[in-house]
Length: 117
Image (cartoon, rainbow, N blue to C red; front, side):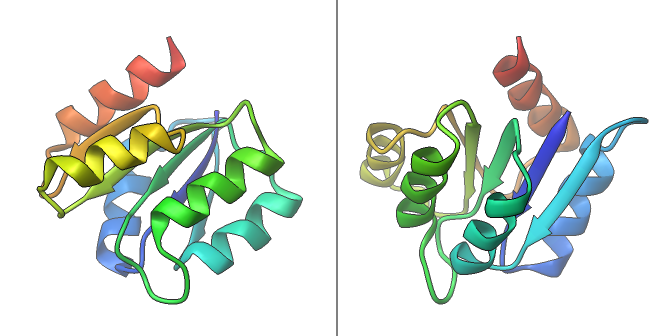
């Protein structure tokens, strides 16, 4: 699996990477939306985990940009924002799933397995 992890928190990026990394996987990371679009230009991720609240470019804008470049990418939004309108907006813009922070390794793995099924 080719996975891109986008989050401005180093702790969250490392936790997601450790939880999902398996032999033969390729995982890239990005610290914000602008960085993520640069990574996507050279890396064709199958799955993207995306935070919403980030500096320089928010996750909702970034997920639209990623899907324009890589329409087959499956995007899981992972956010601490617990308001329903944000989740609805993420899905409207093309997200394939939404996971609230804090999350468990089991919940994250379940969401990723659902995206790859």
